[in-house]
Amino acid sequence: MAGGLAFVAAACGAGERRGSQDRALEGAPQDMGSELCLASSGGEVRREAADTAGIVSEAVPIGATGFSRGRSTTVVKAPIERVRAAVLSFDRYPEFMPHYKQCRLLGRTPNGGWDVYMEVSALQGAVTMWARIEIQKPVVADGVETYTSRFVSGNVRDLQATWRLEKIDARTTRLSLEVFLRPKLPLPKRLVNAENLEGSSSAIAAMRARLEQSDATGR
Image 1 (tube, rainbow, N blue to C red):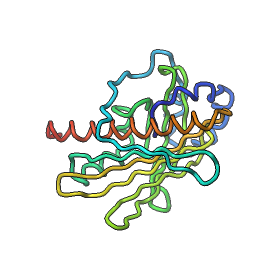
Image 2 (cartoon, one colour):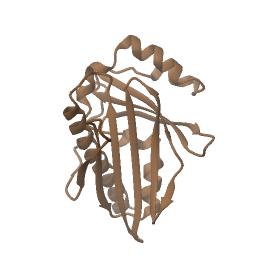
Image 3 (cartoon, rainbow, N blue to C red):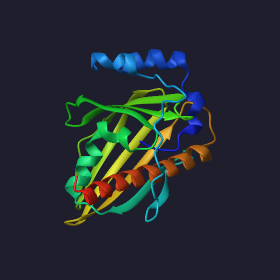
């Protein structure tokens, strides 16, 4: 769920991708197989960079590991109902989220969450990463809705994302996104941390722009 992913270019070996992906998608729709992990140098849809003004970003340390999650928070001029609907409309992410090639809802989990498959591209579409995650059912506390993901499988080492939604008033919502993507390459921690921080900022900027543009056009 993060942008700025070019640093993982070598993480997607073709042999590794094929074997582990087949295991990850057992039970998925039959028509998915021929579309997965097919990246071409001209395949990525170019999108304008979203405005990051008004977004507060910070690194969130993960214990003593030396890694940190990227967290970005902003205020969206849209009611919380519309923000929630956009956050949970996973299949629409490739229309506006940076680097997304595919995002599909495979079904609901026994615990009431969402089983989601996603692909993100790097190097202008020449490389594809994929992951299957569970978006867990929301936890509501002190007026904040929290949607947390759990990494299930993929050709990355780990992928985590947490959306937080808080109603400010009938027309305004505070929105936060916390992300952590760790590829399988032995990359410097500072680079992984920097990419996650940038990724949270660009992704939440794209979500805000999507919501406010839709609100302005009445859609």
